[in-house]
Length: 170
Image (tube, rainbow, N blue to C red; front, side):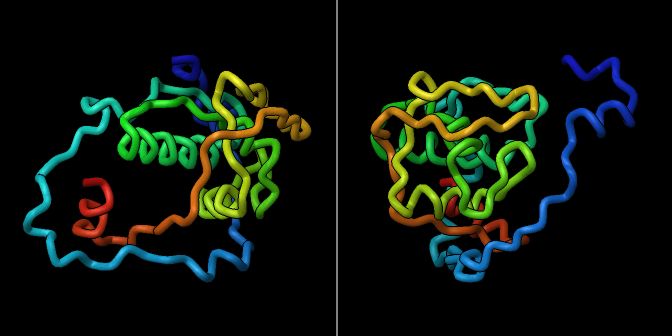
């Protein structure tokens, strides 16, 4: 990969961002998945790649936008599972337009992004709003597409709860 010839110091200053602290009060209202009564009926493994619910690998490059990529990946997968259609959605839209406690290339959190989408901000496709923040510079929001995907809610998986994680993934 493009980082294999870097020292740890070069890699950490080039690619890794500072620890991002979540100060968004809305996240105090997180909804967590409950332990499932049906944990024994869950499969031992699930492969959403094999089932066609995961887009090709994407690269955030030198922008601290992992929060946007993980959010979009989750929405893409959920959409594919629900509709049978795999659509590549725009991380750049979140990086540039989501100001719900997220800070573009300086970091953010999935919960903030999910809330932003659920507040009525429908998502554009990757083709409509391509990724341009790879150099680490967040541009201004330039959304011109109407957006075609939205959320009504999201739930977090409780920490250290494998049964809840498996129930969420299955």
